Picture 1 (tube, protein in one colour):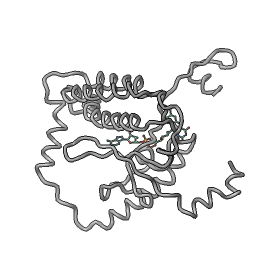
Picture 2: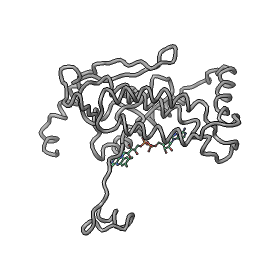
Picture 3: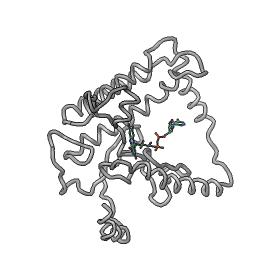
Amino acid sequence: MYHQFKELAAVDITKEAMEVGPTAHYVMGGVKVNFDTQETCIEGLFAAGEAATGLHGANRLGGNSLSDLIVFGKIAGEHAASSAKEIEQFKEIPESEIKEIIKDTLAPLSRDEGENPAAVVSDLRKMMQDKVGIIRTKSLLEEALTDLDNLEDRSRVVFGGSGKTYNPGWHQSLEIGAMIDVSRMCTLAALRREESRGGHTREDFPVPDHSHWGKVNSVISMNDVGEMEIGFVTYPPIPSDLKELLDSEDLQEEE
Ligand SMILES: Cc1cc2nc3c(=O)[nH]c(=O)nc-3n(C[C@H](O)[C@H](O)[C@H](O)COP(=O)(O)OP(=O)(O)OC[C@H]3O[C@@H](n4cnc5c(N)ncnc54)[C@H](O)[C@@H]3O)c2cc1C
C-alpha cells in the first residue's frame, strides 16, 4: 500500500491521509455451469472465472478469484477442446437469424440522431451505485427496477456514431443491453433475498436468515416472452469426500 500510493499517487501515507472508497470488485453471481466440465446450459458453450458461478458462495474471499481462474479455466479449456473435437458437422443456423443479428448490430450506426451511449452507461453506473450498492433497502431496489426500465428504453435508441472502424461508441451501444440485464438480475436477486449474507447487505433485513436462505441459491432465467423470472433452488449437500477434506485437521491448521 505504501509503495502503491507513493508510486501512483505521490502520497506518502505515513505522513498524509489517503483517500479510501468502496468499489465493486467481484460479481458473486454468474452463468450456471456443470461443476465437472464448466459447460453452460448451451451445448458447446463453456464459462469459467468471474462469468461463471457457484464457487465462492455469498462472498469471494481475497485472492480466491485468481486461483479459481487457474483451476477452472484449465478444466473449461480442456472440456471445450475435447467437445470441439467431437463435432462432426456444424449445426445449421437459419439465414433469418443471421440477418436479424446483422440488423441489430448495425442499428446504432444507422440512426441519424440519438443519445450518446456513454451518457446512458454513466447514468446506469451511478444509479446502480446509489440504489443497488453496498447497503440496500426494499424501496431503493424497487426504484432501481423502474429506473432500469427507463434506461433500457433509452439504450434502444442510442446513436453510436457513424464509423465502423475503431468506434468505441458502437461497442458501447452493443454492450448496454447486457449491462442492463446483469444490473436487473442483481437488483431482482437483492430485492427478493430478504436477509443479509456475504456481500449482500439489506438495511431492512440486517442479519442472515439461515432458516429460509441458508442453503438457497437464486436462479434467474428468461421466459418465453423475454421477461426475467427468478426461482430459488436448494443446493445439494457437499460431497462426502470434499466435506471430509474441509473438516480435516490439516486444513483447519492451515487456516
Ligand atoms: C479493483 C479490483 C481488485 C481485485 N483484486 C483481486 C485480488 O486481490 N485477488 C483476486 O483473486 N481477485 C481480485 N479481483 C478480482 C479479479 O481480478 C477478477 O475476478 C478476475 O480478473 C476475473 O477474471 P476473468 O478472466 O474471469 O474475467 P476478466 O478479467 O474480466 O476477463 C474477461 C475478458 O473478456 C474480454 N471480453 C469481454 N467482452 C468480450 C467480447 N464480447 N469479446 C471478446 N472479449 C471480450 C474482456 O476484455 C476481458 O479481457 C479484483 C478485481 C478488481 C476490479
